[in-house]
Structure formats: structure tokens, C-alpha cells
Length: 139
Image (tube, rainbow, N blue to C red; front, side, top):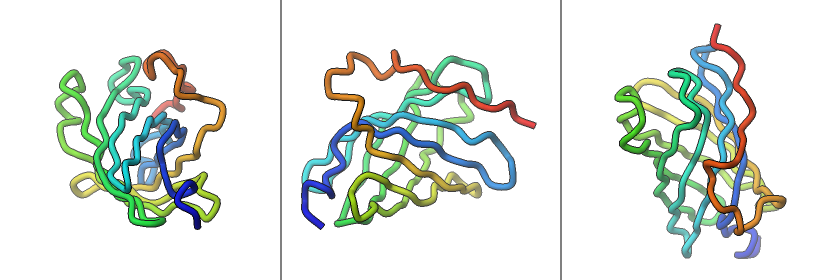
């Protein structure tokens, strides 16, 4: 696999799922910067539990070849329940356009998948302005 396909810099759209229907499948948008395998970025997602418009978090981690490992940390305006970091571990597809794997938070874990978004360019003024689909209600 060439280094251009491995570089994760750009916009990614995805979703994460909770185990055993503990929460809805939640969409997210990630803006990643991959500097020789050092990952930084931001994630924005709808606030499906407390009814706010969006939650924003920072992302820090690494990419070694097709292995991806990062931690998501919610910002200071997030509800107190979101104070713990969320760890993500996944694999980059052979074509370099999909990362899939698992996330974990304390004693909870689930799956995630994200896709390189070819339609969203670097000229996006603010991730907060991007509309995310409404999540399904928690049952």
C-alpha cells in the first residue's frame, strides 16, 4: 500500500455503535491530520443523550501502516458524564478509504466505521456548521 493511501489527513464521516442497544448508532464527522503517523484532529457528533445540538472532541493518536489507534476527549463544555477519554483501535482498508474497528470507554465498548469523505474539502469553514443526521431515539 502506498503512503498516500495510508495518510489519513482529511475529512471522514462515520458512525459508532453501542453494545446491546445501550444507545443509538451515532453519526460523526472527523477532521484528521496525519503527520507521518501522528494523528491529531477533531470530531463532531450529535448529542444523542442530553439533547444538545452537537458534541465536539479532540483526537490524538497514531497510525502505523494500516493500524490506527486514537483517543477522543470531549471538550470542557460537554456534560460531566463525558469526562473520560474514549479509545479507538481500527484498521485502514487496502484502498485507504475506510477505517473500522472498536472503541472502548471504561467497561463499555462498541464498534465504529468511518469513510474518507471525498466531497468535503479543506475549505469547510467550521465543522459545527455541517448538519449531521438526526439519531434514532433511544429505546
